[in-house]
Length: 91
Image (tube, rainbow, N blue to C red; front, side):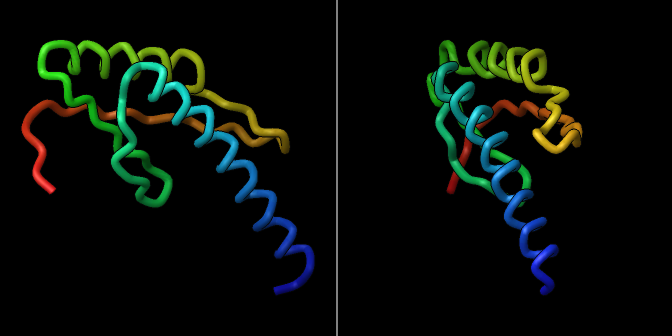
């Protein structure tokens, strides 16, 4: 790698880590649990049967409203996609 490429990779890592940090904080505020990271995705779970689905929906709406279009410090705009699913989970 050239020095410029290495600096670019470091910048990308810092940018994505910063974005993920605010997304994770918002998920935790809405009582979600982070189950895993997969590439550029976060899998979060809400395990409370009575309020979990509503909390997940409220979180999804808040994430989309606050961070659905996020301009990075280098002027790149990141777009957030969210999918919701309901049901039993086995690991």
